[in-house]
Amino acid sequence: MSRVIAVDWSGAKSGGKSKIWLAEVRDGRLTRLESGRDRTAVIDHLIADAEADPDVVVGLDFAFGFPDWYAKRHDATSIKEFWTLVAEQREEWLRDCPHPFWGKPGKRKPNLAEHEHFRRTERRVAERYGATPKSVFQIGGGGAVGTGSIRGMRHLTTLREGPFSIWPFHEVRLPLVIEIYPRLLTGDVIKADFDAREAYLAKAEFPEIDDSLAGRVIHSEDSFDAAVSAVIMSRHLDEISALTATADPAELIEGTIWWPQRSGRSPTARVVVPGCPFCDVSSESIVAESRHALAFRDRYPVSRGHTLVIPKVHGNSLFTLHAQVQADVWRLVAKVRDELRSAVNPDGFNVGLNDGEAAGQTVEHTHVHVIPRFEGDAADPRGGVRWVLPDRAPYWDQ
Image (tube, rainbow, N blue to C red; front, side, top):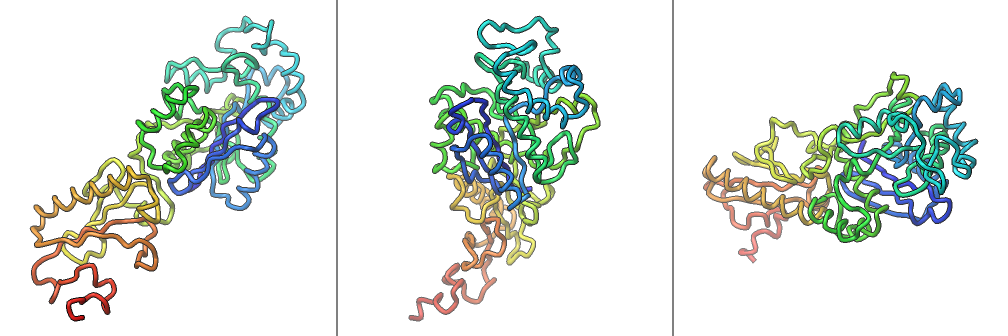
């Protein structure tokens, strides 16, 4: 699993194209962030995208179900039956705001027991974070989540009839859809404030986001939620890969919000690409580590102490990664060099990287070689790295 898509949804009856944002992180980098599709077009795009490349997990920003008591009231015994009911009743519910829905003019929050307003997953959010959850029954007023959820659930049937598995209801396989709540992924930030979004992005350090996309990320609350959600999901692909279908009767009708079980906002998280030998380095092999990089001994050393320094984010070229990542890689190179000076007492160093196949790069995860050199290890060491092209190296003979 190396690809993540997050969709910041909208329940707006009109104007949804500008409010629905799709963000994709591929191999540890935000590769696209776009709007311009309505709800149906987004779903059609996701299906076509997954059919072309099923190695993807999609996070959708709306509730996948209602409290189980409400489904039972309507004699729905499975989530499929309930999604069908919502598809049939959605516009009537949104127009008339019948009990227990609320939020429209004259429709105050009904006198239900507090826990009856929420699914178990929302109550767990409140217990863990102390945040006041939003009720799917609220379809008007500030913070309403019901409208988007009601207009979203019918599309889950379409996704299921297409290539997707939907967690936690079905057997977990790729392509996969999960329910997300961006507030749990972005953390504390006043997302409606442009300056706050800009400050958050600068302070939190997102090596996955190139400077070329940073302006689009903070363009709006919706673009911000989509981009940050995709990035945080990508940092926890190991957790998402370990998800399983539920056997809990309540969850099978209500659904469950996914959020990281460990802190998701640290940029130290490694982004693992299956099949990449450097993404699969064991923790025991690591000899030095920094915020965005780590170091380990070369498996085929050309000298004693030969060490590789790599970014934690997978990327073919160091120069396509965020400037903060590049700077941190070079800081760790300097640290490794200093440590090797004490450990193996070399007489010099060759430090460099192969950038591209034509330059001899054989592993697509960019890496910097730190090679200690010793008097007498080569008959004539003059020229150093110039010997990558042997015919041209000895310029002193020309």
